[in-house]
Length: 266
Ligand code: NAP
Figure (cartoon, rainbow, N blue to C red):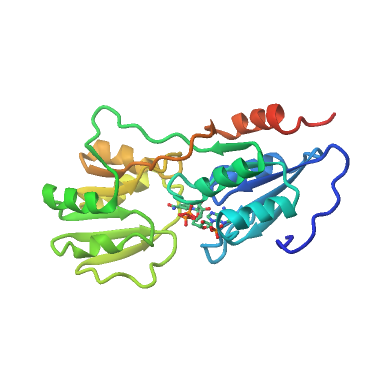
């Protein structure tokens, strides 16, 4: 791993520098797909929120840049030529910072983002824009047993609901756990199978799932299980993002790189 303070190695002639803002399945997959490219120096960046993050393939760095000015300084100091924002659909800030920094430096920027899940026939979804709206929807619907899959840092608004029994599913333990009247924590990391999700919803007698529209296959089985079992879903929609060229998968991102940044040499 190179630190932000290490000066960049001189790049061979024709080699271009790419920053991947990662922390997602797509970010890791893109770094892996580019690992053999001799025409690119690829640096993956992680926010550093998880205690033992998966390491991206190739060069990487961990930690915030210090807002837009910090990102501009970093891109300049490391002499990087392009940015791919592959942060999570619910990472609210980094994409805007990347857009502002790339705009200031005149660098090409691509947003790599998996498509959002769409409701299917038979689904009972309520789509909301923020957690207070989800809390209100739970109150209105009279939900009693709720699977809360919103991330361990976004639990607090739900603790006000005394009449609900929560099963909180998270990758790592919420610390501190807000003062729920009735909540249990289930530590689990996807992917989750349909059979396991069916069993979880049935065994726990879940009547409502609250989650974010993250998209992707790893955590989609709960939605199909909910459809089959008639479980209501309160789904937080994605917030607006800066207007940027969008790729919905790694192949499309590779094609964008070939057109806008660098083509692999033979
Ligand atoms: P955020 O609101 O967009 O970012 C907050 C701050 O964290 C940014 O201003 C930046 O700090 C730093 N940061 C975020 N992503 C970074 C990256 N890839 N490399 C370096 N610094 C980064 O994001 P968040 O919701 O806190 O999520 C943090 C990271 O976790 C994201 O990279 C995201 O992909 C991943 N993640 C988020 C979620 C979610 O639901 N939010 C789920 C799964 C994974 P500075 O301003 O100091 O540069």
